[in-house]
Length: 277
Image (cartoon, rainbow, N blue to C red):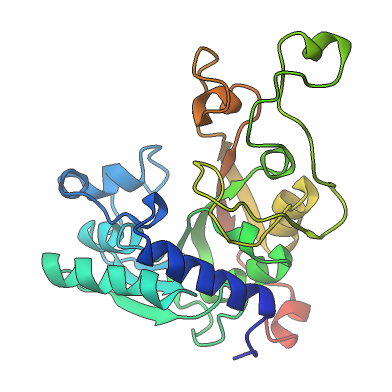
């Protein structure tokens, strides 16, 4: 495995602190979710109605939610996460519910602990924002996912990470100034991390270091890494009548997330295999 990247070390510590503080981002799956676990995690029906017996990697997905639910739905689940505290939540839920799953501490940027084609399905909730190089993550996933396997991921949209979280009642501009607005603050092309937020919000994790990934990287690098995109949705959170500055109000102007269904091509480019990806 590669030496720990300073950014990833920072984010591991940030997520461990979030667990210690019992953040809303570290809440384990509730009882009602296990009544229909597959329906809970796959409301869009992308997984075909059953994952029984499938080898599932829940990538950067610790926290006692995704792994236990996919396991309860019949998957043979491995959870990988950089945070040992988040993985402990998975162990606790698995023990309480007598669910079998495997937990592995590691980074999404280095999946060398897994065999080529080891998984039938890779699930990745919002987490790619915590690494600088999303293309490397995609190549790692392409190696461990079998040909024809599915990769379902959710990401923070670039504009959402670029834009202020709070509503500015005196936003600049003749049209916007009368009613306020959200302000674009971060460069699209710099590659630098955006400023961490100091306290809890519904869109950013306090203390974590995050990166804006351009659409060319989110979509183009996914295709170049050996995937075909089968579907793409923007989860809906908008309510224009909500309180300015709230998740719902901001989402009426800036969609926060994108969810992508991608299928692994039958053949990886030989250059990726030779490079050890």
